[in-house]
Amino acid sequence: MLKQRVITALVLLAFLLPALFHSAVEPFAMLTLLLIVGGGWEWGRLNGCQSRVSLALGVGLGAALGAFWWAGGLDQSWRGLWLFIGVVWVLLAVVMLRRGVPGWSAWPASIRLWLGLLLIGCAWLALVQARQLGLGFLLSVLTLVWMADIAAYAGGKALGRRKLAPSISPGKSWEGAVSGFVGVCLLAGGWLWAEHLGWADGTSLYARLWSSGPPFAAAALVFLVCMSVVGDLIESLVKRSAGVKDSSQLLPGHGGVLDRVDALLPVLPLAMMLATF
Image (cartoon, rainbow, N blue to C red; front, side):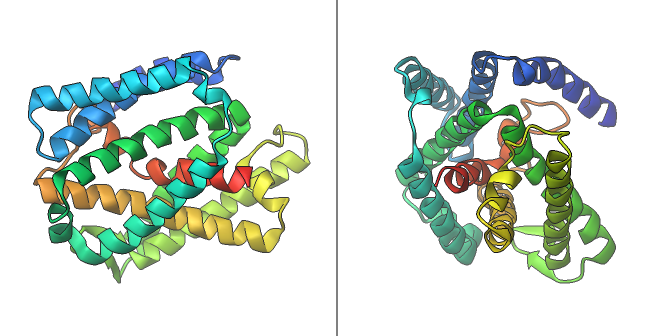
């Protein structure tokens, strides 16, 4: 399993890193759009669609986003959309986590299906527009989620006592969540220090938040860390409702696309919301 995970990670990095660091955004947008097709396919499967229907949903989502790109949608400002999607994610967090696994299946299938595809598509738009704001900005958002996850895992292993959501994800604890926030604060402080010394380009999310004052920056980091946990929990809830462990096996050793990006789905549009308002 470890060998498989390492091989998959190396193959992904071999494609993602050159696209990410390319001077133009198009290679990165195209590569991530292919991953979104996989995510749309997985979402259809998680919601009980047959294989052909799920594939059509994934390809259709990719085609719709491609047409949106071709029409110039990536070059427009979507501040209103980020605010709307932010409200949707907060409401989902309140409603879904309160109702739990049984509550998800009680929703009409069409609402579950199309809402999920909308949120996946908006996450791709936020991802690409974050890259347009600057490589430093995108990396700061990605590393925020990664640090929150790594620090939460380490803190939960060492200190975890009180379960965060035992019926959804038994491995998560309140101590782990707090550890994740502490880790993100350390990351943000180090990043700001590096920018102050001129070691970074100054386009990071942390710099933008700090420019609005320390209290705002601290509140925004709390919010983003909480929403990264929400993204993880909601995907776990959906998988439990579907009776599966992973969203798919598209990424051998890692599960599916949605397994890798669940925490990013809410954080990317919310980071754009905070950065553009």
